[in-house]
Structure formats: C-alpha cells, structure tokens
Image (cartoon, rainbow over all chains, first blue to last red; front, side, top):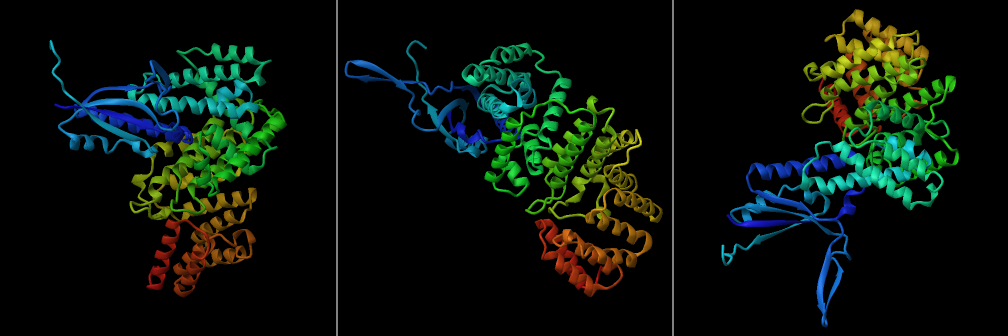
Length: 121
Length: 403
C-alpha cells in the first residue's frame, strides 16, 4: 500500500493564550486522533521535530553556506510528521479531515512517498 | 503547580510563575501528539516547569540575592514524587487566601482567584463576567501590582484576621458559583466550569487543617450548598437548552454523587454553633434534595429556614425567595403583599425574577391578564437567552388561558 507523509505545520503562538484546561482538551483530541489512526491500522511512524527550525545548507559560490531553517522568518513551524499508509489521497483526506490540528490555524501537508526498487534489495 | 511555584518564587513574581507553567503546557501540547501521553503526565509537566523556573532565576537579575535559595528549593522536589497532594493543597489554599486579600478590590479578587488558583485564561474570565478581555487583563495587572507594592504574601492571617479573610474567601467562591449557576446574560444559562471550580475551591477551604478551629463549619455549609445546587445542574436544562424549573425537573438526572457530597458537608457544617446564611441556604437545598414532592409541612420547614436567612441577611433577593415559600404556606395573597413591598426596592428594579415570580403567583390565583403583564415586564429586563425563552413560553401560556 502507498505510504504518505503528513507534515504538520503549526503556529505555536496560537496556543500560548489557552488555559491549562483548554490545552488538556487539545492534547486529548490529538491523542484520540492518533488512536483513530492506529485503530485503522494506517499509522506507521510519528515524530516531533526539535523546535529550532533546523538548518538549511546551500551552495554559495564554492562554499556550502549554512543558514537557519526555512521558516525562521514566519511564525509557522514544521512541528512534526506522521507516516501513514493508505490506498490513495482520498483515503488520506478521510484520515486527516478531523485532525485537531486545524483548530489552531495549523496546516497539514500530505506527500506520497515514492516507492522505489533499490539496487541490491 | 502555580501555587507551589508562587510560594517558591514569592507572590511578587506571579507573572513569571504563570509564564513558566504556561510554557510547560505548551511544550506538552507540542510533544504529546507525537510521543503519546507520558506515564506520569504531572511529573513530566513538573519537571519541565522546574527546569523552566531554574532557567528563569539564572536569567533574571531580580533574583540575584535569593537565587541560590530558590534553586535549592526547586531542586529539592524530587522527580518521582514532585509534590505531595497535601503540600499542593496547602499552597493552593494560601494562594486563594492571598487572592482574597482585603487590599484588593472585590472584582479583582474573583478574577485573580480564577486566574491563579483556577487556571482560567483571560478570555475565559472575560466571557464569564461579560467583560472585554482588556478589562480583565487590566484588573489582573492592577491586582498583581497591589500584591507587589503592599508585599502581600502567602502567609495565612491569624486569629480574627483569619476569620475575616475567610469571609472574603467564601464570598468570592460563592460569587464565582452564582455567576456559573445563573449567568447574567448570554446564550448559556449555566457555566459548568465556573460552578465546578467554585465547588472545588469551597471543598479545599472546608477541608483545610488551618481552619478547623475557626470557620470550618461555615465553609462546609457553603460547600454543601454548592454541591446540592451542582447536583441539579444536569436537570436544569433540557435537551433543547431550555430552562426547567425545580418542580418540573427529572430527578433521575440529578447527580447523586454530588447529593451525597452535599449531605456529607452539611453534616460537618453542623459542628459548632455557627449559623450562617450558607447554613440556611444549604438546609433549604437539602430539603429539596431529600424529597420528591415538597408538601405543606416541608414548605413550613423551608419557610422557617428562610426566616432564619432573612434574619442573617435581609437582602431583597432572599426576601423574594422567601415570598415563594410564603405562598406555599400562607397562600398567594400573603406572598403578593410581600412582593408589592419588594417592588419599591431599587436593587430589584432590573431583576427579571421579581415580575416573573409575581406573574406566576397571579396566574395561580387565576388573574391571567395581570400575569401576562408581569411576564411582559420581565421580558424587558436583562436575562439569558434560555430565560427569555422561558418567559415567552409562560407569556404564551397565560395569554392562551392556561397557567
């Protein structure tokens, strides 16, 4: 079955105004969402990325220059990713549609992982 | 956690404490969706908050002199058993008592209690009191300034000062509960979150070992009252969000655990010889909780309690409630005479329940035209949406010849 990556972009400033109780509810919703994916047997992996926005390496002249991550000028950060398996994009939309991620202005980018036959495998 | 850190940092740094706790929660919110909830979530939060706090005392010059002492205290709390429940409750109780300090304006006391002890956000408090976010934020800033400038700390007052402060604490809790139980306006009749927090704080105060000698029975009476009233919350609103009067409520919907809790607190409120307004109100609520249909004898008992209550606190609202009991014991005419007296009270001029009760009594006597006029008067006064719809239904009923 094709694999997809769900890239969760979020805006951390949007939940800094929530009360502890509201945050608890949001966390519960995420957990429930993860559980639904697990129950459906589609979830393969999930990871949070470190909050530092990472580094971008670019060739500049004859050097490789290292700059801060791509999102450092905007408030939105790539917070983490999920790897899921699904028939097609439509099935993914069904999985992602009810994510609590959208309640706080987050976006989810869906990318299909290209299956490649690797030499020697 | 706020209470504990406030003790460690000192109340003058409430702002920093809130920041540390908020940051820890945001971290959880960012991490747990990927990692799942840790085995010991509060331990996790505690660890992150403590590290944040340690970070802050290193960064902020204001702590220079006290930094080693604060750091030591932060380090002392172990990871495995961050805070004993007793220690948390003690810190929290002190925090509530601080929030109700007489140097703070009464408005600020409620807002500050909700913010620091209850963990409510500024927008939530603003919603509860129908104020703008900026108004509440300003109220909190001013309150924190007073705490700082007057060096108000977490020490509990002693002797008669403790009794006086307790009165303020109970008043704040009662206000919080009432705001939740019967919101002043808006789409929702009840705000369960406010009622729940008020009940939690009331029980915290009632069970505190600091108050065993002074004031515990009064705090238990308030806790009992709030527990009985909370038990009825699920029955007060029907599936369509419409208001249901006590006598029409489906008792199966009452929360029996809260009724039981109410009786437990009521029993403990009877220790000692204090008789407060909370005692009388809790006793009335207990009668309603105990029996399905209140008969004549019981109404006489309720009226007796209202007489006690009026003797303790003759507020017009209490006299209006007493009038209802009078109507059940001495008849509608006697009650209407009391209500006519209350119509001159400026405090009730904007109170929709006054014409609403009068309309009900007139309808019972068969005077449907006058009843309709009363409901129209009530509809012109401020009330919540469900209350307005209730009044409209009543108006329709009496206009159609039923009561």
